[in-house]
Image (tube, rainbow, N blue to C red; front, side):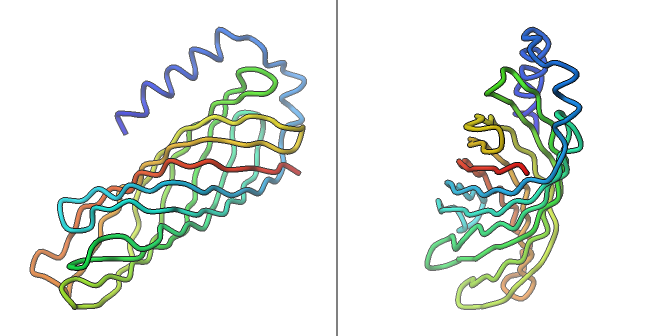
Length: 188
């Protein structure tokens, strides 16, 4: 989370200096949006779950105004790990997303929320599953292609803990998911 403080502070400073956002334009920027992301997932763990993988995410959100939105998603982190220990995780998110328009075609955003995830695991031939919830935070940039279509690049960090009670005596695996992705968003 400490890594995102400079990004958020820099975004606020840039928006304050740019002065390009007009109040009358901002009042009309509410509404529904849908989107998707595809990217790279880095799984960092103290155990055998370290791996790199693809990640796919479908998003639906509602913009309350030009600066604030609520967003939900379904995310597939795929299968990760090695032969001794591997897992597959999917989940749902809910987030609050803040956006700062920099120019008419560029916006910076930051989001934070909750991930509810299900994990199927195989540790030393012991199979099981767990479900849990985790916090996440992310930041990125939107580029307006048309009035309704945007493309984006973003980085998101998920604080995922895998609880594998029946696989080992040390059943709590502290794992971080780090997602770098590109995506598109369509605003209605």
